[in-house]
Image (cartoon, rainbow, N blue to C red; front, side):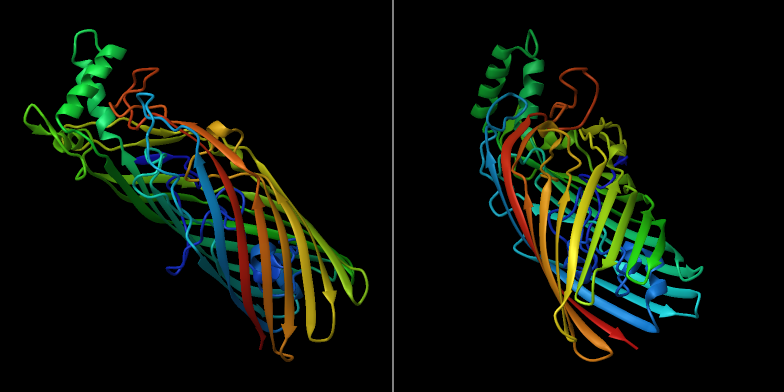
Length: 484
């Protein structure tokens, strides 16, 4: 199987060290919290460069860090998402039945990050970052109304990012980094075996796929005890490589500006595609219905082409007085390259399977953040920030259950407590409210293996997922910092 231009969609990546991020926190599948200190300002601090997590935001900021420093933390994501079905149908236009997916988002998951910086001399600083760039984890169960579009998705990733900065003079600094990124994808989707067999039987009757023949075929299958769904399970993993650059300009000791760019990364995830029909009952002409369904979907090896979106950021930091500082960030994400996902399945024995096409028409997105610091005392620094972030989805017809995304608003609070001259602790809390979102996603194939509109061979269930989502997330972050 081959997925072209998947770019963080239905069969993509996810978390790290066995810890998995949850439903997308940032636009698309970007995780959105690679630094607890940054989280406290809703990630408006790209030009602050106050600890080694600047490696992610802008590697040029390494030039501001003295000696050797370490930051390590974790973000706990507590999601709340509800789906209400508004009439999902199968390829025959009949109700799919089933529920609303229950608690399809996990109760809580965590993702860690680690950063290390070292000032080599007055000009050059080195660093290493390890963080979660993308991820999602959803499981709707076997019998929810949209099961023919998605049963579950588990997208995992982590990124090694060695970096360096060069301080040209007191005003100009440049940074560069390389990324080694691991991705692992697991996707499950129910297979509408009953509708597929109904179409197969009806097509063999005189007159073909007429409404009357479809009703007749459905009656024959019901009398033969044919019912139940199959399950498709696809998984794969891979390493990919990319780069990032940054520039920082110090206007004076209180004001600085930053620019940063992170490249796209191409992956080819290799794995397997497995189909099971153990829950399909009944038989036709003495042949088990499960055997007939399985014959059209043999197991296969899988290969998935994935391209992550590039990003570009501009940010500023200004120290108003000894107590107050303000900052801001604007980030652009090149999501418009993510069009349809075309899954080309390999031929096994003499059975050829058509393409699976997942409609996706993403747009470029923007994120705008504003934040502030307040130095309450020598030991306590308080932070706050707000951010608005676009969803890459352009319409309800583009919203797939693997990414029930929408525009969202961040509200963040944070603090840094200085334990002594060498060590400090960062705390952060964020509330992320997603705009209410409707889904009206239609699969362009049919379980009979042909497109209803063009007649071309394809793989899919057909039907439409129709419903609405209400979502919010809470992020709780803890980070320890040490200066050697």
